[in-house]
Every structure is written in C-alpha cells, then in structure tokens.
Image (tube, rainbow, N blue to C red; front, side, top):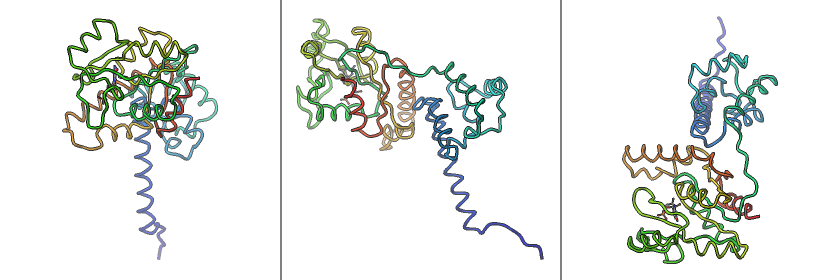
Length: 298
Ligand code: 5GP
C-alpha cells in the first residue's frame, strides 16, 4: 500500500487561513503605498528589516504596480533595466538589486526633506477624518504655552460648543465684514457649505510675544497661509494606514455608496498634497502625534 503524505485536514485549514491573512496584509500595504499613506521607500525598508513579514514576502512585480503611476508595461521595463527577475520577492533582493532599486525610487519619488528655518506659526492640516481636531485639542490641553487659534465660522454651534472657545460663531454679514476689513489671515468654504477663517490679530500678538501659534485648518487654508506667511511651518497629519482612514471616514456606514466613494476620492486627493508640507506626522496615537507637533514649537 502506498503511503500518502498529505497533511492532516486541520493543518491544511490553518495554513490556508494564514495564506489568506498574509494576502490581505500584502493588499493593505499595497493600498497604503498607492494612496501615499506610506512611501515606496518605507515599504521596502520594512521588507528588508523583516524579510519574513508580509512586506518581505511581496513580489517585486506586485510592489512596482502598486506605486503611483506605474502600470505593467512600465514595470517590466523597470525590472529589465534594474536586472531584477520578476519572480523575486522584496525580502529576497540581493545587495546590488537593493541599491539599484533604492536609487531608482529616490529619483522617481524624492524623499521628503523638512525645510529649515521655519517660524513659530504652525499649521496643522491633513485629510478629512484623520483626527486633526483631536490632536489639536490634546496640544491645547497639554501645552498651554502654545496658542491654539480660534477660527470664525458661519456654521451653527454643535451641542457643547462654546462661542469664543471652539469658534467665533458669526453670521454671513459679519463674515463678509471680516474679509472686507482684512481681519482674516486666510478663509475658505469647507465641504461646500460653511465659511471658516483665521483671525489675524490674536496670532500677530502672540507671535510678537514670542509664543508659538497653532492653526488647525483645512488644506485650502494651509495653502493660503503658505502664500501669506511663507516661513510658516506646515505640518501634514497622516493616518497610520489607508484602511484606518477609510474606517474613520465611512466607519459608521451611514452614507450611501455614492457619498462613500466621494469621500474616498477626496481623501486620496488630499493625501496627494502632502509634498507641499514641511513635516509629516503619523496620527497612530493622539498623544504621540500631539507630542511630535508640539516638538516643532522648539
Ligand atoms: P468642523 O465644522 O467639523 O469644526 O470643521 C470642519 C473643517 O473646517 C475642518 O477640516 C477644519 O480643519 C476646518 N477649519 C476649521 N477652522 C478653519 C479655518 O479657520 N480656516 C480653514 N481654512 N479651515 C478651517
């Protein structure tokens, strides 16, 4: 009688569950790179630090096509040029291949280098739902030396919001006046609905006293501050992963499919603007992200 060497049923089931989990983790990593939540270089580093991890087990072919603007044709040309076999996994690349691939990536996706000589005016922006408000509130509580700017808005107060503390709640006429009298450093209509703006006077006063000022505003506002005060410190808050941002954006699942898709498209576009910022901070835990932002106050 011939002996068959098939593993017991339970082992095969466990192995297949592990394979599914590993595939899912690789898919999540590819998505993080595609959505620019992590850089291509960061994913490679993870693969090389831990060749047995999902990052290390990723094939070079799937890695390259996950990168922004690289399709299958371009991928094959890159592999030929770098002399890397398409069956290679990231964790299994040799020293020469690693060097060549890194050089290629740094040319195509230049690493983010913080700009020096920034001022004490810090702008915190980032994609919708990344948790800017929570991080700003944490800084306000734990770093009283930093002034958290109070914006003016035409949005009505939510329960518990206090005028002058969370926002200055104003009507359209008053908002028009603030703009006309040049009292706002920047302003924008957010989510196509209400107007929000940063009063200039309290900021100028605090900066003159040598204090650090923090603005928690949207992307349009951050760009206006860059134009009005080119030496401002612009910080972009990143989610720890794309999945986590999706969860925070549509987690409650109360929106219809169209609204869901719209929010995800917006978030993708917002993430693509991170290159305009001086610093990137990952909001993995609120205290850690808040400490990283507060540290920029010097
Ligand atoms: P919420 O209505 O939930 O308090 O805020 C909505 C959005 O408005 C947030 O993304 C917040 O960053 C943004 N925002 C708050 N104040 C300002 C401001 O003064 N200027 C700009 N441009 N955006 C603001």
